[in-house]
Length: 233
Image 1 (cartoon, rainbow, N blue to C red):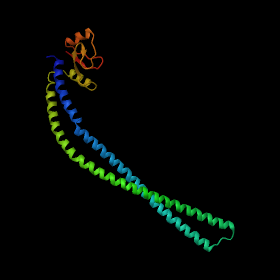
Image 2 (cartoon, rainbow, N blue to C red):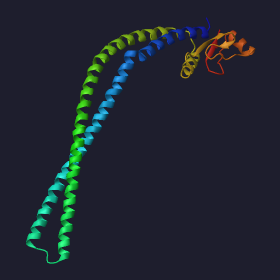
Image 3 (cartoon, helix red, strand yellow):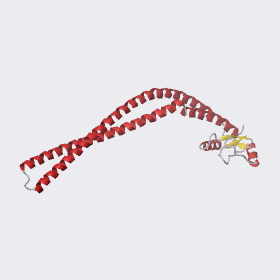
Image 4 (cartoon, rainbow, N blue to C red):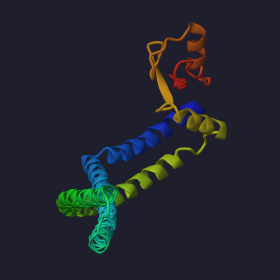
């Protein structure tokens, strides 16, 4: 048995292990786990964003509370000044009126913003509660499914390891250059070796000229110019 025939036998065992590993990654249970994990992470992200918004609003409401208190003190001070220092002319009267209007407008703006923030905060509170309920539900669904999959995955990994050992044993007698070539090709084309079929590459259906066909049939190492696979009879 020549090197390429031995390498073909190794490929059969190697690809069998690869296929089992790929089937685990593509399993419906794993796909559902990934979907649940992504959903859980998205919910956490949304909850964190809402919590940050609420904290920012609370800080702003504290600042508004201080601003309202200061403005009310300024209004009281103005009232006291008007009583203690009555206006002596129209200009002073106008000044008192303008200052009162400015303070009143500021107070109204602060109170209006406070009411708006309270309404938003109440809405965010409802969103927070909803997100927390959904997080709990997602976690309750995720954990048992994860544990079940982990058990199956561990069992499958044992089987894969056994298959890898079986494949490794088939490397005996194969020159290092062939193994290196196989691994290099496998990085871009799987499987790395294709059978010759009706004068064509079994991997990409590329037709070969008669000179290349002769080389393949004689057992020489030939790589398909199209897909890069080693081609054997």
